[in-house]
Image (cartoon, rainbow, N blue to C red; front, side, top):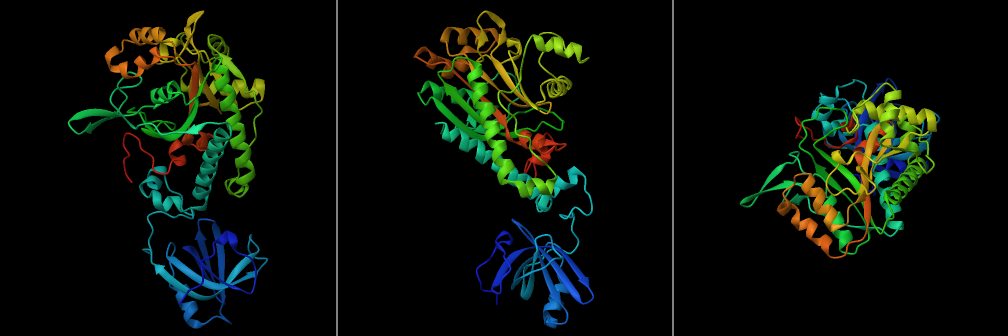
Length: 438
């Protein structure tokens, strides 16, 4: 019976010592005098090679009885070979089937047989077993670790804000109601207001990661009803450009780390990362309307950007500034929430920033309104019930510094970085108007 401590495929080196590897059968090939098993674990794939001339008949019989996705353990010796990409293979002495798979699979993790996205999501667990998908989420994990590392190094505290809120934070009806004992509450659209309250509490520099929910019946390649963000908030800023500086340097830091630490995964996906140089280009309203007019993608003045406009601006910046990243600033205040600071000299424009990447919005942010009178005035203008936001606004009577921040979508960042067609491919278990399982 196998009893040696398990070794992962990444740790394998040619030697005369016995090792035990465990994982899934990625493929089985019976070729006359040689039997091959490709064993897959979370680190990669190793070839197990049994030669008929020197392998026990029982071992060969076991290999012949294996099916793709059986869970197995293999004891053997790692040997050098010129016939595998890794330069090694395992000569097996013992194989144990730990748990069998049904021989007919609803989806092929090898991707030999292509499947539609809906089928892949229906059988997401099998879909995620592919080495390519493992690479995607290793890259996503490194992105997150690197962004958190950057913020931690710059004195940001990691915090956690509520997912359940007693009122609507941004106005509108795009919220999911939840039964909370004997009353109705909501899943957060964005914990923006609670982050501001922490700044008011004196935390000064904070960040958090977590989910948010929007009850949008959107059926697009970039929208989901549940998404995850990394968000930061900073006190004592001069204006929204202090926020821009933090965000762009965080992005550069993260991409540099991914390019260095995820080379194997990037190679598997056939992707290279170009590290942008700050400062990123910045486009401001109302000039944005003129640019879009020139590009033949006009939108009415006072309106927000649509998808076509974002994509057109992305091509414009790439051509003019040789950059895939850029910021859009000074959005019309009419389309922004009540807590966004406006330009005092031109209140029709807000100190609101979006980070764009390859023609798609990755984040929104900017400077927040910290002056009580203006905050309440803007809430009235947005026709909000002042009593319903009093839990938030009243604090601003008691000495709150200037502040600003951003919230960056993790799945969208992964999607655009790896040139995926649909944000659901960059989400482990996506949620949209039709999909709530698995």
